[in-house]
Amino acid sequence: MSIHLQYASNSFVLLSIVAAGLLAPGPMAAQPESFESSVSGVVSWEGGGSINGFQVELNDRSGRQSAWADVRPDGTFEIHAPRAAGYQYIIRVRDRRGQIVHNDIVQTQVSPLEIHLRAPEQQRPVTGVVSAEDLLNKIPRKALREFQRAQKAVQKGEIPRAIRHLRKAIQIHPQFVEAHNGLGVKYMMLGEFAPAAAAFEEAVRLRPASSEPHSNLGMALHGLNRYEEAERQVRLALEIQPQALKARFALALVLSSQAGKEEEALAILAEIASQIPEAHFYAARLLGCRGDSRGAAREISAYLDSGDRKHRETAEGWLQSLQATARNPGSPSID
Image 1 (spheres, rainbow, N blue to C red):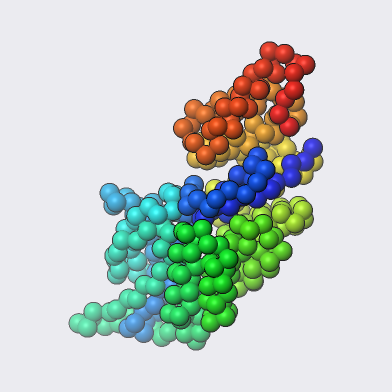
Image 2: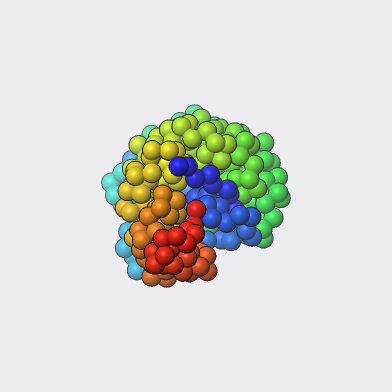
């Protein structure tokens, strides 16, 4: 048994595109919703010091730390935020001694960020020099502006216009990983898997140690029915970031499309369902396809009890059908 996914549109999280398409026959209007977001950007030290050992952290509005990431040698960082896109965080940069050298408020959808650090005049700057890689990889302001215009276009549902802005950003700065990754996501929204895969492959080439481009490339390859390659990319993403919800969800969906791998897919969906209620929805689909109407009904009930409303109308209709099937095994079931 295999499940062939179709893709519907979503503004921020690629996996929501995949997941919605599992049951929706046609494209949906772009909606800015997400179960996981990311904040990325670049840190530069205007005093000319080294940023080795620096960390960027996100704190919720009460001041509790929510997520953090090391600043890479080229000054870039990427943090997977546990809340939806648009949520406000306090962002802090700590030096190698753990002291806070930057403090600001950001929204998860405003990315990439430029954080410029300055050493106080009365203090000696941190020892070290800016490397050639730091200088070469600094994202030009013109490229950042094009990236931000693309984000605004997405919010208005203007995906082709967003693609044009991202292509301009890449033309200005070919090493702009976030632009390559974003370009791939926009192509996925349009169901254009081949150019999406090409964009993600470039993001992976430029930043092989980042989880998200691998995960996204896996989903693009899935759309091209290249399931084994897709699985390999998503597993690479999980090697880099084992607890990444998006990648774990992606793996479950990729496994769902391969005969003989349904049990592993169901196990993953069960593990993440408390954080991603939609996992109940897709577990029900798998169980229903193999004739387990009672198990499918149980998963749909759990999904409805979660309060998630994205697929509520469809889920309610399914539950009625599944309950009827349980009462009368001869009646038709979902497939």
